[in-house]
Length: 435
Image (tube, rainbow, N blue to C red; front, side):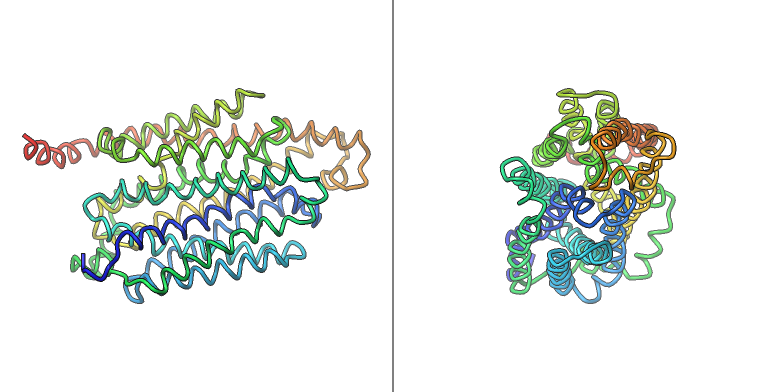
C-alpha cells in the first residue's frame, strides 16, 4: 500500500458513508405510518416510496461499478454525498407522494454510489482479509438502523404525538451531519486504484469473468438473501405494529444482533468458511422468520433475535464470496451482485405492498375499502376493524416471504458441498505453514 494512502482513515470515512445509508433505512422505516397519515398515502403508495430507494440503489451501484475503475473511487464518493444531501433536503420539504418519491430516489442513488465505491475500496485496502473486512464495514449498516430506529422510538414514546407527526423533519435532518462529515473526509484523502486495476486484469477479462455459471448462481441467490434481510427489516414496523406495541424495537433488536455478529465475523468466517456461514445464515433466517409470522407478544422478540443471527452475514459474505472466488470480476462483479439484490427487493416491495392492501380489503366487511377505513373521519368501529385486519395481514406477508429462505437452505447446502474441495485446498497451505 503506497505511503500516501491512509488506510484507516479511508475505512472510517467509508463506515461513516454507510452509516448515512443505514440511517435512511432506519429513520424512514419508522416514518412510513407518519407519512401515510400526513400525506394521505395508501399502503401501496408507501410501498412504492419505500421500494424507490431499493431500485435507485441498483441503478447507482451498477453504473458506478462500471465506471469506478475509470473515474476513480474518490469522485464517486463525493457524488454520493451530493446525492444524499439533496435527497435529505428534499425529504424535509416534501409535500406529498411525488416529492417523497423523488427524494427517496436521490437517497437510493446516494446509497448505491456509496456501495459502488466502498465495496471495492475495502477489498483494495485489505486484499489479505476481504470477507472479514467487508463484514466489519457492513457492520455499520445495521448499526445505523439501530441508531435510526432508536431515534424514531424516542420521539414516538417520549414526545407528544402532535409533535412527532408534525416535526418528523427533525429526524430526517439528523442525517445531514454525517453526510457532511464523510463528504469532507473523502474530498481530502488520497485513494488507491481498485484491486482489479492493480492486479493488471484487463476490462475484457473482467467482463468475460462475469459469464460463468457460478457467478450467475450467486447473482440469483443474492435476490433471496437481500429480500429476506432488507424487505423484512424495512417493513417490520408496518407488518407487526398491530401485533406488538413495540414493533419498531423488533427491528432495533434484529439489527443490534447483526452489529454484534458482524463484529465477530473474523473467527466465524475462518471457522465455518463463507459457504458454511451462508448455509448457517439461511437456517437461522428461516427459523426467525417463522417465529415472527407465528408468534405474538414477547416471543416476537425471540424471533427477531434468531432472525438477526440469520441475516447477519448474508450481504457482506455474498460480496466477499464474489471477491475471493471470482476476483477477475472486480468492482463490476461485486456491484452487479449487490445491485441485483436491491432491485429484487424493490420489485418485491411493490408487489407485496399491493398484496398487503388486498389482504386488508378481504378482511374488512363486504363492500368496505381500505381508503375509507383509513380516513381520519373513520368511526371507532371502522378503526378497530382496520386494526384487526392489519393484525392478521402482517403475519401473512411474513409467512409468504418465509418460502425464500427455505429455498436458500437447499441452494446453500448444494453450494457448500460444491465449494468444499476448493475451500479445503485453500486452507491446506495455511495449515502446513502453521505446522
